[in-house]
Length: 116
Ligand SMILES: [Zn+2]
Image 1 (cartoon, rainbow, N blue to C red):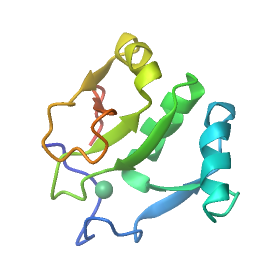
Image 2 (cartoon, rainbow, N blue to C red; image 1 turned 60 degrees about the horizontal axis):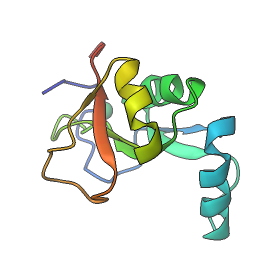
Image 3 (cartoon, rainbow, N blue to C red; image 1 turned 180 degrees about the horizontal axis):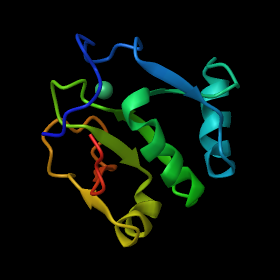
Image 4 (tube, protein in one colour; image 1 turned 135 degrees about the horizontal axis):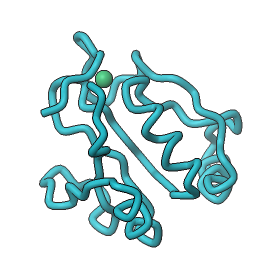
C-alpha cells in the first residue's frame, strides 16, 4: 500500500483536506452538489491526493469521491464511467476489483506515478 502523509486521520475524516475549486469538467457535478446544499466554492479533497485529482480534472476527466486511505486503506479516486478509458490512456490504473466499492458503476483508480 502506498503510504501518505496522514497521521492518525480517521477514514471519512475531513481533517486533512483542501478545498479544490471546480474545474470546467466538474460543473455538472458542482450543480448536482449545489442542488443538495453543498457550497459552490469547491470540493474537499484529501491533501495527499489533491494533485492527482487536479491532474485528472486538467485532462477533463470527471471524478466523484476520493480518499487517500490515510495510511489505513487503499487510496482511490472515483472516475466517471465515461472517462475511465481516457484515464487509463493517461496512465491511471484500475483497482475496480477493490471490494470496498460504494458506487458499483464507477471505477477506482490510483496513479501509477505515486510519489508517496
Ligand atoms: Zn493521506
